[in-house]
Length: 99
Image 1 (spheres, rainbow, N blue to C red):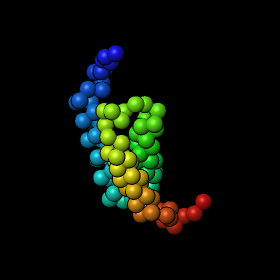
Image 2: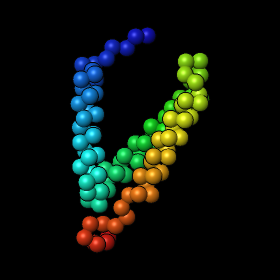
Image 3: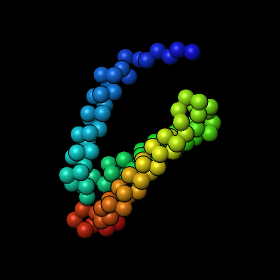
């Protein structure tokens, strides 16, 4: 079955989305204490992107199309990057305010 790609998900739309996310991450990296939510969201997205291919590896028959060691390697790299970001993220709140 051939799926049609809607116009808003074309290559131009995806590239604008990638540009927007890179600007968002750039501004969050300049002041990570104030943008802890952006860093946390990036950690969660990396974990989801690491688990999803592993689930498809076991539920679908994609071993014929794509080697499983590449899927495992990509997932481990993403989980490693998420772990590094988790341990490097700021712990305090801005201004020393606690809730």
